[in-house]
Amino acid sequence: MVGKVRLTTVLKILIVFALLYIFLIGIKFTGISFKLFGKDFAEQLISLYANPFAGLFTGILVTSIIQSSSTTTSLIVGLAGSGVISVEAAIPMVMGANMGTTITNVLVSLTFITRKEDFRRAFTAATMHDFFNLFTIIVFLPLELAFHIIEKSAVFLTDIFQNVGGVTFTSPLKLIIDPVTKGFQHFLSDTLGISDIVVGIVLLLVAVILVVFSLLYLVKTMRSLVINTTEQVIDRYIFRNTFTAFLLGMLLTAVVQSSSVTTSMIVPLVAAGFLGLNRAYPYTLGANIGTTITAILASLAVISSEDGGMGSTIGLTVAFCHLIFNIYGTIIFLPLRKIPIYCATKLGNLAAESKKWAFIFIVGVFFLLPLLILFITR
Image 1 (cartoon, rainbow, N blue to C red):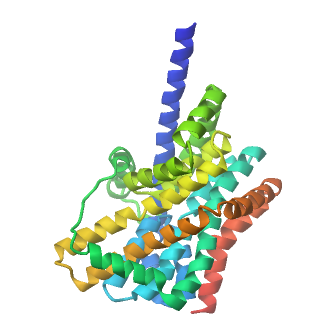
Image 2: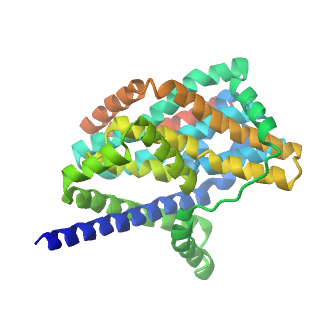
Image 3: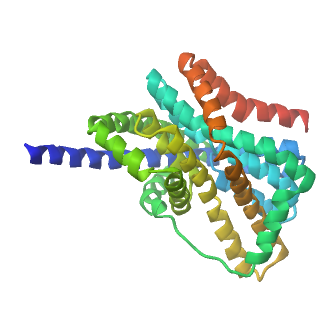
């Protein structure tokens, strides 16, 4: 009898990992589809708006469209390195990219919309990331415009690290996911000869199906395990305290090279009640810092290969701006975590009681408001 129970538990754990793999493929398909829709548009948009306020909302809009702050930051680094935009103009865009990347978490939380309490927790977990970024922008954008504290810090680090040389690193997640995602994409575009727009639509539909399916059964399977034991392992051991949760988020994201993936992974854990907000929050802040490592390593590699050219040095400065923005935000709003968590909880309660507020938040913050600001400042 004991052996049968153990076998069932092992099978359920394997099912959890299989569903998590399907979920990650769905998230990857989402990113690919939006890049197919809007990468050229994104590059044109970034190059048009050098005004700091417009630049902030450009970063939000572009990253919301292509769902990858790494891609947006790479575009910004490239444009800054080629002289199209200045470092001063790039910094608000990087701040906006930090905000825009959180849309993935919010969209993942919508898969729980039919289950009120699960959705309340999921939407709260997703939006506390938004409120962290919002409050960090409110504090540091004016300080940056007045005193250039982020730019000066980034230039200081650039002077130290520009002769270090680059490090190449391949995410293990890419090794297990890319063969499936890229293989299917190439099948549609190369074998079947379908246009990029149609491929994007197909991949987006497949992504929605995979994400909804995986999250639906992921939560059910996790709840069918011994809940008390599962909760104890997750909340008391893996996320034992603020430091371990923060370190886990930072290291995991540095390895996986995608904060969208690592932060959206904890949404179902919070929704199922296995992980508390006080542990999810430092994990998210750690992921914010971890996601900047990729751009920094890439910039160091470019400098190494180009003998420290001015353009590549500027690219490294912009990459460090992204890191410093998140470090400064963490220094202030990790101790003051109650503020973003409180705001996210209030919004989560509102969205759980009336679902329309969730859609108003998503469409308004990530699309309508940025478009309105860009229209006014054009």
